[in-house]
Image (tube, rainbow, N blue to C red; front, side, top):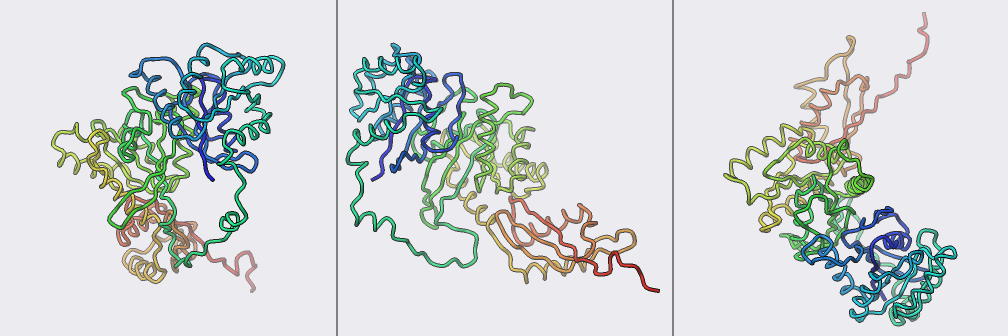
Length: 472
């Protein structure tokens, strides 16, 4: 039986370190300064033979509800409400603080099973702090060290006690049913698998409205938002089902930290957040570069789009805050032409006006994402490719190099995601870059491959007489 647990506690007690230890990966950002985590993050945790969902949350602080820390606390309270049990974490080396006592009352009122964890319990000082945790009235504390991996046997036993039904061993029939393989239909050779969630990363400069837009898609305030720039730090993935014209489609949306120019990033935490955002781009299939429609296509926007192209991901531009634009029809035409001019390597990438505030254009944006994902997965038959190539070579043959003609024999597409083509022929190492670009533009136009990176590699036939002396 599946269950979920929220990790709760004041800032800098090691909640994210515990989260990373349970999921077995360094997913959550960790630093010595307090308040690193802001949004709640979910992960698949494993402890012994138990598999469950773990939720990392922001540190609890006393503040006004309208402030940033107040909105962070609201996200934590939502995580408590959605979970089956709570890990209440304190810093054993610091002992029990008034803040711990205040929020212990909040957790107790939630009426959920509570497991009190005294983290950083290594050493004599930690052992004494773990004993002090009794005064919170939340039961027996579990001393452990999330950083060093000590004490997790005690956490396992406490979890069995707190959730006896959810952690019970399944019956033999249930185990047989779980292990029985499921046989699907054979693949038809297409690289598009609509049964898997479509992975989408939303990236852009700080304060472009990425979190607000994703909240609109989800229909809830799942991600922390506000007028302050740079609120998002961790790259947060949320599951989402979109009902399109072809039916429901499972998706995974990744909200990322705003990316500034590298020269402006001095803070260590911002560097970690930027690296996490770039990692989200690498694991995505489609990347939405969200622009502020009032100041679109700044230099940093172009740098981000170029990063997406170099990583080989399908690209969609979202023009957010479209409700603030005057004369939207002529402005949209102008921006689409500007996108093709500034980024010819992804010519034809969809440019979709949206508003995270008013929910305008969300269906058009998602439709563009689905369409470009299909293009990104497209494979072209070898016969079609070579009929097109024959016509191109007849009209515009490659230039001669050192008096010798470059001969292109044929072309294939061995894979997609992104479309990848291989040229076969003689002296292809001397093929000019300009002629490669000419072929890429022709492929993009003829086979309708807008907005996706196109890769070409060359394989030259070996000369059997190369290196041999000529006989007289």
